[in-house]
Length: 280
Image 1 (cartoon, rainbow, N blue to C red):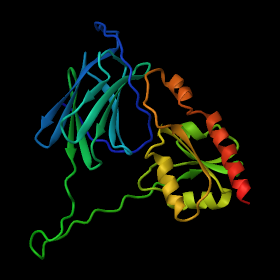
Image 2 (image 1 turned 90 degrees about the vertical axis):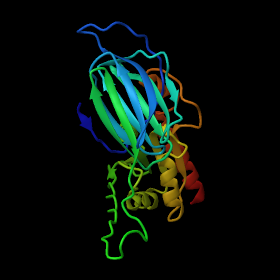
Image 3 (image 1 turned 30 degrees about the horizontal axis):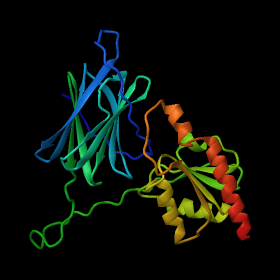
Image 4 (image 1 turned 120 degrees about the vertical axis):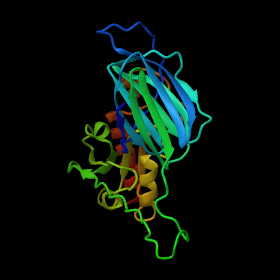
């Protein structure tokens, strides 16, 4: 079996949909049939059952911490879309047909200090979820024992595009490219956050619109609002999934339904400019 270890951070929207199973032929897509959660010696084991060998991509996402596994060339055929876990550190597992030809599994965690390993099998994937070992301890071991101090994670500097400097829109490439009323800034990570660029944007434009394919509750918008509140508070608008429960559907339909569009970013920018100008 081949193992893969991947770590990363993106902003994403995870929704569930139920597919219809069918027998597999040589030319038919792999069927994602079921998911099971079991207790393991170091944490939890999530088994993704498929009708054959699966090709996949995986990424670890923050706020909340979750592992997203996209199985390519696959059809989601499970009768269930959600599995509640009683095994720490897994909170629940969700499944859906994310896009045509891509079945998605989302493993949501109970905490953020986790690591994972994915093993491929002839009939699916086995995901081992484990707590990360502590890298430094206080008052343990001999006095002359070397201490291991974790290195600070490098800050991913935001990519700022010089356009109309009315306000600044901050988010992922896919959501901020279209609006021309704002100066886009692409934030690659929510932690660590590029506070220097955010603070400069707040001072230069006097308003910020955040855009994310994610709930606005504890999302990147909230992190940015917290960052600028203590330095240079400005009017803000938050484009993202509001405090509602996600539904199933095609990706483009869901983006429109929850207002994750360029038009909503433009509306947010106009609203921010009105509130900013009233203060001047």
